[in-house]
Length: 169
Image (cartoon, rainbow, N blue to C red; front, side, top):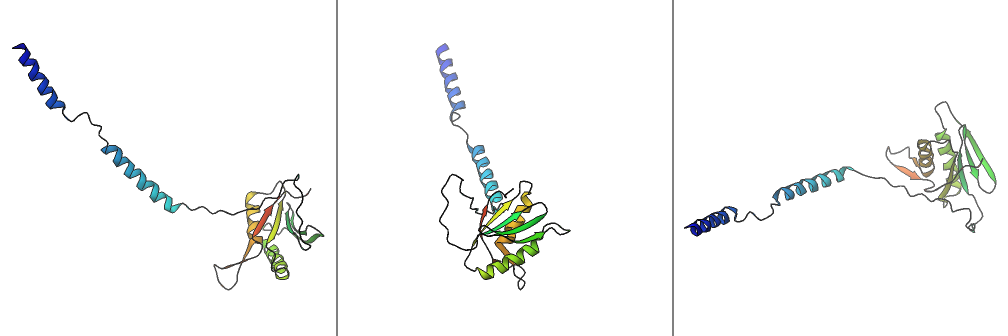
């Protein structure tokens, strides 16, 4: 009789635990669906603007054989902006205004340079070590494009190929 009761206990145990050896992955799937939805939803609102810069070649590299002509440079100093030709020297010096850098004067002069050299697309910006990042970006934007007066959100291209180097001391 003892063996019968052990057999019953085993059968009852097997019935009770039947199918409970499986891993329940439903909560994990629910969490994955929520995470995927969250990642997709937040990715729509994040946009990154990338501006490609041409950094100058290292000093050990051989200089490039460039054609004769204007090599436009804008030197950012604490007290002024200097528009310079790499070959001949300074073209114009723009002292700071009461509001800061004279970006309007820079834009006007750069547009006159562009009208004389319409095929030229490259310029070099030479910030001094004390130049803030915001100032550098403002000068880069002024040299790259200018706001057209006819349409509120239209811009014209000036010198889009920007290179950055250190200002001469």
